[in-house]
Length: 129
Image (cartoon, rainbow, N blue to C red; front, side):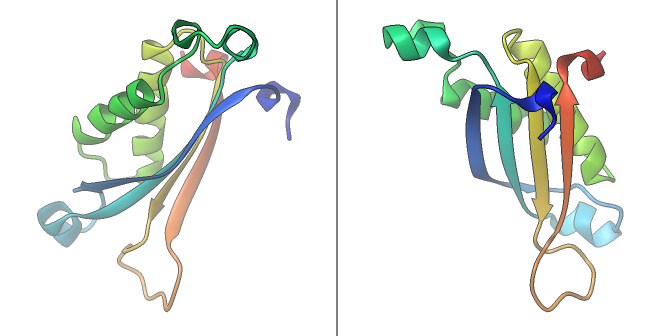
């Protein structure tokens, strides 16, 4: 892994949402399920040492930012959706140094027997500007 993405992290996986993102008219009209896996690089030394909740970022607060970002705008591309979520996380939590996000679309309108379409973005705070 790139050293820029080393260190402590907060991880949330399989965050499920229903939304209307996509290129196809049917996707915009009917919607579909999306799943998001998220890793945020945060210095967790103080909360690990002190057991003080105020020294860390609440998982619930991270989820709330992701949920609002997911719902506030429709995107044609899951790449753009992922970047939008990253931008919102950086804006909401100055202590987040980097984010890795995977946006998964299990019902993508392509002929798949199994599996899903997905993208993964790796962004360091300097990339967010």
